Image (cartoon, rainbow, N blue to C red; front, side, top):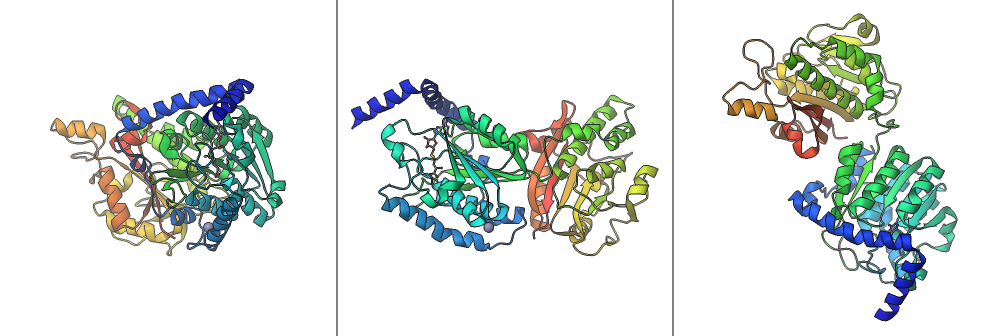
Length: 515
Ligand SMILES: C[S@@+](CC[C@H](N)C(=O)[O-])C[C@H]1O[C@@H](n2cnc3c(N)ncnc32)[C@H](O)[C@@H]1O
Ligand SMILES: [Zn+2]
């Protein structure tokens, strides 16, 4: 048996040397991934922020009701797939196809709901083996009466297993399926170029960091706004983490495999990322070219080196907000900006939305310049005393950039902004970070942190990122969709990688009012 395997595997390696090299490279990459994970010093579930209530979160993010009838209909479908495979003589679960595992029930359930709700036209996956995930997608497409699945797969090294490839996919579903034989590296770029744009991507092939990164970067570029990437076995490397930090999807989550008899081990994780609707590509260039952004940069004071540094960080925060706002809410959305420092940022944010309504500004005094005046509505509000002049649930999106530090009493004002945002709507809040690296150093030297002014200036409140996060979540009942840090003064004004975000000069939260 063993000798037969060796002979068959060697023959395969000789016939397809390039694929053979990819398999060997994979073994080496696995060692590197394990070392990198160990060096990260925290378990993968912590690194990825695993959520137990992934299905509920996914539905909330897609503005879908929960409990979901589609999700309920998945159980019998999955049981049927497993029963069909077992009847056909296959073993289902861990290491059931060479050393490879079958897709698990939670991963399948997420794919099922995504296909049902998003009704994708073009789905691409990598890694077929028995074809459990392929079958789930095809069952869904068949039910939708539209769509096609392309599956890139390198057959197992042992040719004795080849008759088992795709055995979960019943004959009646195959007209919507194209099997593309070869490694993802060989076949994915050409396939994506041919398809031009895709609606959904599923990774379940070689789970090395190098291959996952390659697949995700290739597929993400081809994914339509609002499209989803579902990724199995993210706990094998840091790749999914690196990817989401860089691509900044509209929403992402990480969850556990469902364990149990015949299903995968207790520690496995999978993840998914939703590409921002209306975000056809990286935004920064478009933002920097906007006349409102250019105007904004001329309005910022640059008389001292410190002013210039500060202006760079403020502009970086504005670019980051513009990036986050892009396509965040549906067409026709209502935008509220509270205390804009400079009016043009409101127009910049408005321009990131799809067919937006006329934006509204709340401030203690009308400081809008003439251009902004003609394109926005204004209400004078005393944030510490008065109610906001809008009915409940009125706005889709509110932005409050940096100025919360000027209020003594923040809770009533934050409650008011939450009240006027609709359920499922967003508040993008930024504040200068009291616990920023430069403030920690200043305090250690016995000096005043820059976030809190003494004689001149109006910053009367200081907020440390983690503590403020708790207040926003626990006391104000916002859901934290995203938290980022921007700038380390005087070193950089750029958005920070996640491990450094709480040292950032400015903290940004994307908060959601639960539906
Ligand atoms: C985990 S299994 C796929 C399980 C499948 N999605 C399911 O639910 O049944 C991984 C598959 O990817 C294939 N594979 C391995 N390396 C690959 C590569 N570099 N590119 C594409 N497929 C690869 C394996 O031979 C195997 O068929
Ligand atoms: Zn659903």
